[in-house]
Length: 265
Ligand SMILES: [Fe+2]
Ligand SMILES: [Fe+2]
Image (cartoon, rainbow, N blue to C red; front, side, top):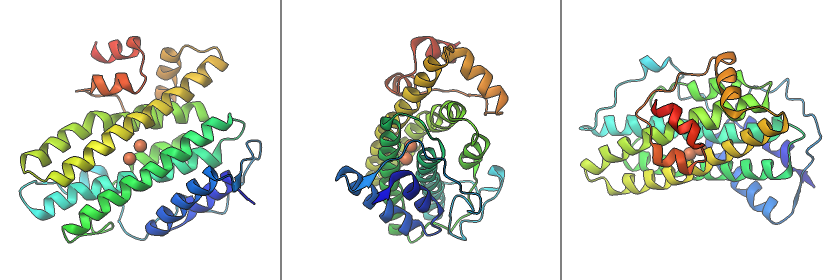
């Protein structure tokens, strides 16, 4: 029988986006139907794999070299959706990476990240479909890789990963999505608005999962979440949080009142 963490690594290594999506959805179903085992103790070696597996395109460039996205041209809107598609592609990768890389977490940790991975595959498909309806596809524009770079910086520590990837990088999505949604609302692109509502709602759940496991690890090591976050953000050179913040979404995503107050200060 297949083992979940090994299977997650194999899918992470796949260099075809569509293949990654369909294998991931299948893995989720098979795990639900108890056709997959879970070995939390196994230390998996991925040294000779080039991670994440990704198609030759998009070309990866520095954030400032990603073209500006104008809403008044089809190409501009496609460019914006393409950036989103790339984020969802890497979000699938980061959820798979959280599963295979870190041993000795409770079973629910792996199940939570499997659910995130499945939802990211759905988001990627939604965005990609919309992109296609505009005559473009994933790979047509250059993309930047900040999200994956934070994943790579935190390969040695599950608490750093939880602090800085879901609770920092994905949480920025909670702040950013509403204004993107409103830009599509203005031009009455209803399907894009609906898609962004789904994404925003699911992303609250992903950040909540990040918070759950970050707080779990903090209490296990008797750390204060506030000072542990501050130290990890400095140690791993996390981006400095910049407002405006989506306080309501962040509250739903499990940040404590104290943490929210610090953002507002
Ligand atoms: Fe997503
Ligand atoms: Fe996410």
